[in-house]
Length: 385
Image (cartoon, rainbow, N blue to C red):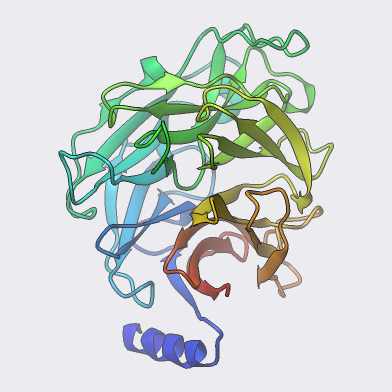
């Protein structure tokens, strides 16, 4: 199978079309379902794919582990699966990996993997009947070995979080909580150089109609994981699963899904101080969304601005039409659009759903995404220029 995958990959690449390589296939390796992909590239050029391995079924709660696979050939082939977080018969999920490349103690880079654990269904936690916690582990050898887990819940989860917006009063206890999904981010220049930033979301107080108790936020570390701070809450009721990227001039963009579903567009929040507070929020009508996850990534700085890549299921009716977009003006416009996957099976309710992206090189973006009713998570390279 590995040889066939390599041959197919090379054949399609020569025709400027790149193969979809299965990475996690539901029903294999001890898990009935795999969901919530995340991907990074290490300083050595290896790709590491993460996912939730759901032991007994596809539900969001239960015996769920965090698993990983590694590729040493740009995603043409993938090594064996490792289960790196196992919270016994309870839930460990929402993997949010990032490589810290600014810590002088680890000149070869250190991988942080942030994740959540939970002891009840999200709906019950939202009612106050359960707890979601926040942890991280690290690796200094490309994911071959991982540190002992560190619990940062007391620094990143709040029972009280006031807001400066009087029309949006979230002075109640936080309940449901989740990272990202997808990769976390790091500032590599400016006054916040080295800051690791994890986009997240929470619910506050009793459940409200149309999921108005949900809101996005972020948490960050400026000392390589020794301590963490919380951002302000994004002042948009129903903002939910989020992704973030640095921008020029010490700014940060957070991009979230609208859990209310009244507007089928992505929510954008702009920070002037590295993600600590929010100066601007708006619905980006260039980015349609069916109430699903999306992923944003800086591809590097060009002419003083970050070139951004964004991917989501760009369909307002169902999770389909997975689309990669490129912006050369830090998200003001998205002039380049590439359709990655469109479902063809008539019974597929979710042809393409959650996804994450990674910069493979200056011409190629790697996409790790769920397809065909969550039956598999596949990797595909996209030649975007």
